[in-house]
Image 1 (cartoon, rainbow, N blue to C red):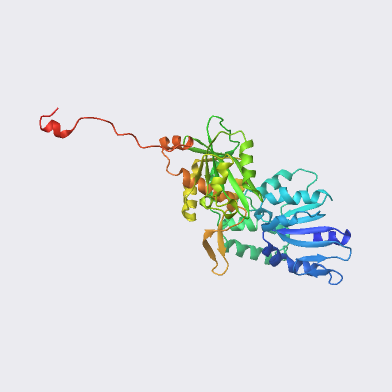
Image 2 (image 1 turned 180 degrees about the vertical axis):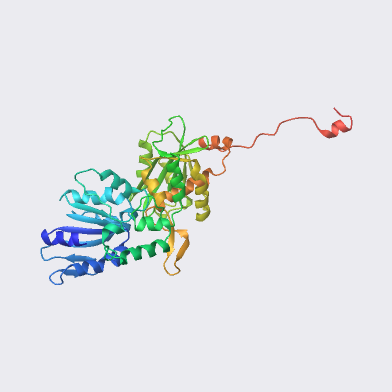
Length: 404
């Protein structure tokens, strides 16, 4: 926060922003800090907009990545992205980076590691890049825990180590990228997939149909997973996610890809009639745009679907580049925490990771318990019909009674 305040005092009409994973998080964690960091007056405080207006025309504004589109149209001189591991990675590429272009503004990414996600890849990528400063501050380096030359800090750290799990301590105090995110549904499954080499470049087989599994976003993102089944293996070869786009955008995205498609699986709400579509379902609208064949899945229990996805994970291979955002979403997908009860709720937290994770769950409930012959029919997009009974004139009664 001091970096933003200092920059705002030095540049007239400068535009600066602080971005937290959630708007309410920005307000709770940093609004009072910002107000303490500026002299009032002459700085004017706007409580409703979480904005500090400086006498030179500059400002510092607090925002949440749960509505990162609020940054569109801004021309920023600088931004701090706090707890970047929990921020939707689309925010940087789609909105924040373009907002810095006109003024060649700066970006500061800070936060606690949450596994090998987009924050980890950014951290690794920028090591050695002279335009970037990259550093890790563990509890020994940050100076947050009192006087590090005395025993007070060491005693506090020792108490924390005893009272926290090894993963929690490694993540929060040692800035470990290897520690599992607490409450994450697929943390161990992803760890095993990496250890077994199932997250790597995955080749696309042109002769094998590609199935797509959709999570439709009405007011937020839509996610689509592209899968080829090779024997019992499920190859996740591609992934598309976007927000603020109509159905025609996604149909166009599928059309421009070189894949031979099998069947497209849409969630249950795609089968509901839409008032804005003259009473047609979204599935019917998709079919009219050329998206065929389409199957609308039935509504299922979310937790049961997550359990099925965990069991299916050992069959999955992920393209590390094209499915990178899906991998990040699966790593970040976690249970919702109940502050009042101080326990996990039996439902997932709805955030940016939900869209890809929901599409993955739909894939899991669709391909479960598939036998090889059924898999072939599934890949061909055909329903397997029961065998036709054999025709014969033989009857046991005729044999027993001397008949022919």
